[in-house]
Structures are given as C-alpha cells and as structure tokens.
Length: 357
Length: 98
Image 1 (spheres, each protein chain N blue to C red):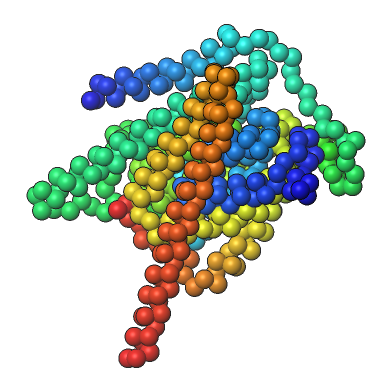
Image 2 (cartoon, rainbow over the protein chains, first blue to last red; image 1 turned 90 degrees about the vertical axis):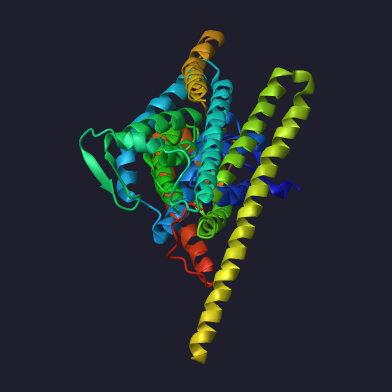
C-alpha cells in the first residue's frame, strides 16, 4: 500500500494522499457553504495526517486561497459578493494579519505556538457558538411574539442586532454598500477587519471563521452576502497569508495542490447549496460545526494534559473532527441534491405547461 | 442577563489578551528555527523544488503564489463545466434569512 503515501518534498513527512483529497472535498463543501476557508478543520486535520503544526498552518492557507477563489467565482455569479465592502475590509485584514503572523513567529521562537493556537481557538469557538445560538434564540422569540399578535417577522429580520448600534456611529467617511444594503462609517469595516485579521494571523486561518459572524453581527450583512463577501476576503487574505508563510518557509505546495483537486468539486457543491438553504439554516449549521470543532480541541488538550489517556483522547478527537466534516458535508450535499432536483423538476413542469398552451 | 453577557465578554477578552503573556512566561527560550529541506531522497522536479526552497525563499514564494490561484482557477473552471450540465440556475438566488 506504499502507493497511497507520498513524501512531501519540503516537510519531509510521508502523507496518506487520499486523506488529503477527502479533507479537500469535505472542507471545500463546508467552506463554500459557510463562507470560510475551513482552516479550523484543515489545520487540525493536516496535523492529524502527520504534518507538523507550523507546516499545517502554511499549507492550509495556501490551499484555502485556491479553494476560496473557486467559491468566490460561483458566489459572485449568484450576486452574493459585495466587492466594495470586501476591498475596504482588505486594508484592516492585511495589517491585522501581518501583526498576527509576526506574533506566531515570536511564539514559535519561545516554543509555545501549538499550545497558544489551541487555547485561542477554543476561546474563540466558544464565543462564536454562544453568539450564533443567542441570535437564533432571540430570532425565535421575535417570531413567537409576532405570531401572538397575528403578525409576521420580516424575511430579512435577525435576532441579535448589534450592527444597528454600530451603524449609529457617524464617523466620516460614510459609505453605502449596495449589495449588502448597508450605510455605515468606513471605519466600522476597517476596524472589524483589523481585529479579525489579527486573530486570523495568530490562528493561521484565512479569517472566515471569525469574519463571517463579524460581517453578520457587527456590520449587518445578510447571511448570504456575508458568506460570499467573506470568501472574497478569504481568497485575498489567503493569498497574502500564503506569501508570508511561504517566505518564512512553512508551506507544502504539493499537499495544497492535492487538496485543491478535491476542494474544487466540494467548493461548488457547498456554494450551490446556499441557494436552497435560508440564512438561519446556514447560521444554525455553522453554530453546530463550531461546537463540534471546539469539542475536538478540548479532547486534544486533554490528551496532552492527561498523558495516560492520551491515545484515547487523541483518537476521539480524530474521530470527532473527521466525523464532523463528513456529517456536515453529507448534510450540505444532500440538501443541494434535493434542491437541485426540485428546481429541475419545476423547470420541466413549467416547460410542459408552456408547451401545452 | 445583560450584565452577565458583559462579564462573559470581558473575561473572554481578558483571556485573549493574557494567553500570549502566560505562554511567554512559561516557555523556555529557544533558538530561531531554520528549516532545510532534505534534497537527497528526491530526483527530477522534486529535487529542483526542494533545491529552490533551500536556495531562495523569495523565488519559492513567488512561484507558490503564482501557482495556487492558477491551479484554483483551472480546477474551478472544470468544476463549473460539470455543474453547468446539471441544468439548475447558477446565476440567481433569493435573499432571505428564514
């Protein structure tokens, strides 16, 4: 079974390449659906497959840049990308990312990069999961209250509305974002993107995991536009991240290209699925994925903290993260197929009616 | 509830700020890392690639940054062609939260 393994030229480790393709398909689907690079799954995934953490981060960012380009092309055609907002956010993202990446190099010098990345992931995932489910609960309450008086909630209404408070800050220049249907100070997306970029640089991710909810909750984008715009951002910041990490010698291009083969199909499936699932469906699935990811990191930390049970916790983390990727991908794939079938059937029925008349 | 939320957010922010400090205090000082790829076990393009990595990170970076979007675009176009054959509308969607 030697042919199932390939030696990575730079990292010098032997890797199970079908694992890379499967990871690519799964994360392509999830990334295209949630609007992110999926580093929160790929980095631990690559680590599990045998990459040292520093190489896992760089390789993941390189693959993410290519995959996000594929998803952005598709979301752009759907009208889900606010390019103006995306370009403005780039400023903050790039500066923030560089500050974060420098911090990682410094942590690597003192030998604590793995521990810090894992703890930071955990805190962030807990915060994001709380935010998503608090939003869903509030939105449901609004629906119940509206139903009680015989009214209906607007189809674009949301639960948490922090963005409305931020929109009240009238610091010039004020800008209209037509696709996202937002009018706010240009400083709002710049500041949000700086903070998310900084965190992304430290965690070694494109930032989608943080920026997607930030676009929804702090800037006020509709879910679909947040997904598309975020992918555009992930693509650019991913390319920038690829450059910085590669220059520091931490990228394995061969692995990134193998992953891209799977991700190109996965990204299309995930993106098209957003056509059939409404905004809150995406938010709830996102929240569940974040919880699963958090649990897998806790297991990894337990494996290090309690060495006697280390292999058990490590195994459980691997099963959980791969199971999560598989379950979410399967769910999204099934919903996409169901939606596509219905659409094709409706088109055929309409064509028959037209032909009959 | 609002006060509890504020407290949780405050604590989370504090942890985010403090973690690098804790790590700095706990970790032993280590020498800067220099990674060199082992070219001995490769031949052909792999040997060339690892040599490029060892000789110039700048050229290695430039090539990587050029190859990634190119490969992504190519794979994207191929996947686009495949999806186009399914027969669904790939150019519009309804914007709704629920």
